[in-house]
Length: 227
Image 1: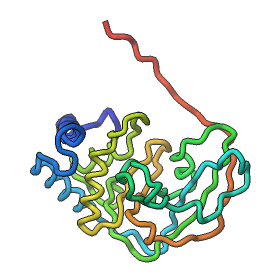
Image 2: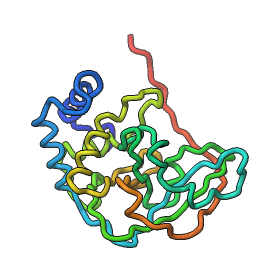
Image 3: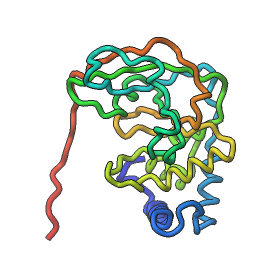
């Protein structure tokens, strides 16, 4: 899905759902019919991520580390005491964010030219029930497809409540027995991300490797002022 192909009705329904979560009822959605349908249609996109699947995580090295790779212990999900509110996890509840390939993992940490980035590989310990919102293993409904687009879409970093909707969805999918969510990367072409609800689902698969970013490319358009 692209911005040009967005289902307007689904966008309006999501906006209203998120508006209520932001300012009226944070933990219990008032539009129960919308939310019940959303959960049901996302659960219908479940597939089994195979045991031994390789996943990649990246971290930008602190200035003092230069090109020295970070230790494996520094490459996992943060402890609960340090887990900030992110795309799918509420504050204090760490998720394991990863990508299916190395370059997407690097793009997701938004490095700059000259930055050193450490990449670590992990592999799944067993098969995992994953909600796939990318249409790679399922055919999402228009509602599930739109939410998959929203999950991967960038937001303003100063908007503290930007993820209340996707966090609510993730917590309900976790409660329904799913192990994570698969969604498209907005930072690298056809890259794919997977957020696992627990790091216990993976094992380390090799030594972390340092990468130096040689270039970063941006494309922009001029937006004319409205009369």
